[in-house]
Image (cartoon, rainbow, N blue to C red; front, side, top):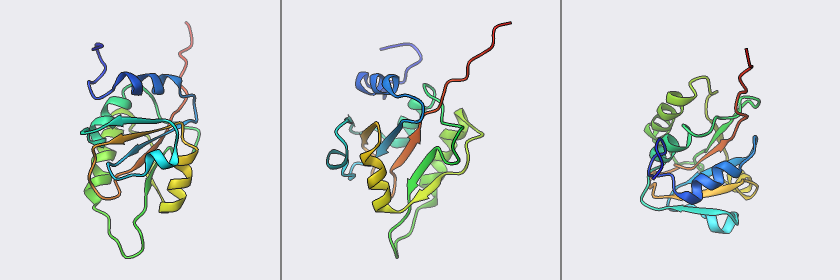
Length: 147
């Protein structure tokens, strides 16, 4: 256990976050997502909810502020409905760490799958809410100027 790192951040996830460069994307996927079929770098986080993962991850990395949409979720299929509480719970965590993040963008399901193919990694969570998948684009750590 490391001081300041939440227990939901496994050694594999910590290593992955460290290896990611700015602009790389990580998918936090629900328990039903086809992560292994879409990406070769899959990290297991069974039993852990996405808001908890967001809370652990977003204190370690910043979101890309050079793009219009550093956070993406899947839009519902035709005729399906979203539970607004899902995005609201994710947004609450995002705002705790990175309050100037633009609104979460929604992406069509198959476009989301294609984006996942090119992501740096997929974290398979224990999340069971409908349309709970989310993509985070890692930013550049701001450099403080010396006095």
